[in-house]
Length: 467
Image (cartoon, rainbow, N blue to C red; front, side, top):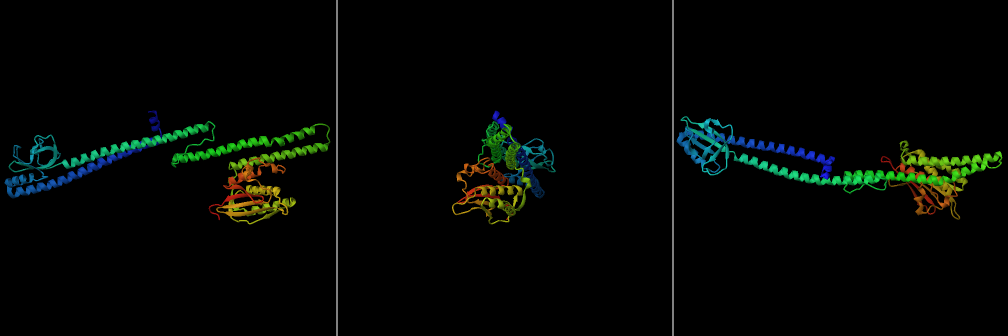
């Protein structure tokens, strides 16, 4: 009973009950209206045919008087489906016709009898069946009365048939509606219970839990899919927060320790002014490095939260690549690396100019650091663009040692630096920043084998109205 009460408290069950009630009331009103209209139409037709029969009987009386009238009535009353005929003397005794008895008072007035009356046909004394009819009473000059009537059995039978059909149809409809309502509502209640249980587990701290999806594609599945996507995003952000906390605790411990050791060394023993100055400069350099680290972490967090999406504009990327190439050409020459521009594409993209410029600069800077040709070849870095389906690719390719394929996913995490790269300056945040920037733009960062070297690919989606 409690489960049924819970079912009745659901909005779907209440709406179903209300719709069912309104439909049944409308159906009942419509059927009763149509029934009464049909009965009224049949009664009207009966009255019309009755008036025509009375006119025919009157014509017979006018031609032959009482003898002809009695003969006509006697002959017609014996025919199948005959009207009701009755000839009575002034005292009300039945002289001829096919009516055995009448409801009292029918013959007291002339003309159309206003209400239906009961009667018995001739030869039905022992039956309990009661007939109803309408009739016209004609008063003759000698005091005799003639009744011409029509049985109402056909309209009444029609009314009874329609009403029985109505009751049967409403009964079947009610039972079917109740069964559908019960089972559909019960299934809906079960789905809600499953969603509630899953929600309780998630609120208990299990962010890996997900709301159940039946695969039917109904409203519950769409709601569960949206909430699961939201939970996945929350879980991803929580993991990122935990990872950042762990990385900060691990990777910032070393520069903070160096900072403390420099300050401690400056305070120990007799030192010259030059020594104090060198110590302070080293402390300032370590502090600047820490500030850059925290700025990079803050930038990545803001990008992942979408805080820079409002600064988007539609523009081609090629000018940004020209600027980056011009900026890093002296750096590449000092490092003995050949930096060149490949094919460029002028398709306009929806981008944040500053973020894309910083991302491409980071990738070019990394490529210059790790580019290096083998024996007989020089180190090269090529900055180019490609078109692939509905994407524009910015490619930074070098011919250095590259990154093993199994470590491509690992190096895009924050503070991750491979053993081979620890001799080079850096924070291990460049690829993480590039990944966050591409996520903000709805694109992706891909690391591919350049054979030899590494291809860092920024894949931007082309706007619907572009290219």
